[in-house]
Length: 219
Image 1: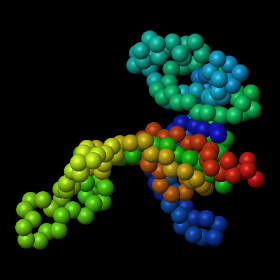
Image 2: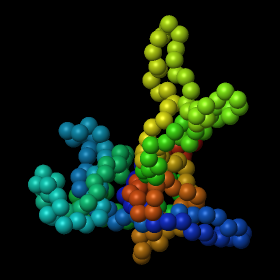
Image 3: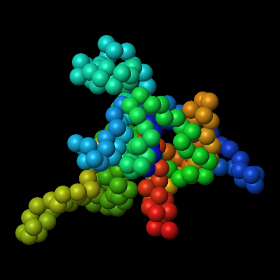
Image 4: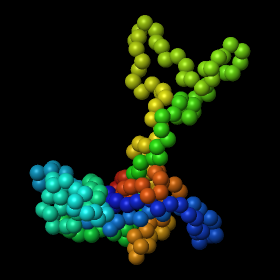
């Protein structure tokens, strides 16, 4: 359940040992500084690491935010995220420690959390792949509309979750079971097979695959 904070750099391609080309996403992951360690036996009641990422000037933080870093004795950071972790992993970590991308190895599987690209307010055809209205005789300026959303007398209302026009993208997306194909500890880079949600420069969280870890425990 280990995890780190990073940013998406972009995409490129690499060749495996059999000469096959694959598209990979390059992430700049860490180094992350441990801001707080939460223990199952403490007041929090669960095990987790609070990590901080990217240096920032003190004047850009509020006093409560700045107080967290001064209390921990570390330099101010831009991003703070919490990662749930088992207690046996937390026993070897202390506040102020730096975690790097070298905790991941080639062949590991990870889950990546990012924010998808925002596409603004879009209609039902682009947002939900609806077909629209047939453009035959009698259809007037209604080609891309969503159609009727009415109900019978019962229940007589529009159900929650009805697919309609609205904001498209700019939402939290998790892609699971992505294979690590490269790790460069000197430049804090991790190469992942396939795509990762978000634009270049977007913030991401890279965590050990929950499903793969669970399968290993079951085995």
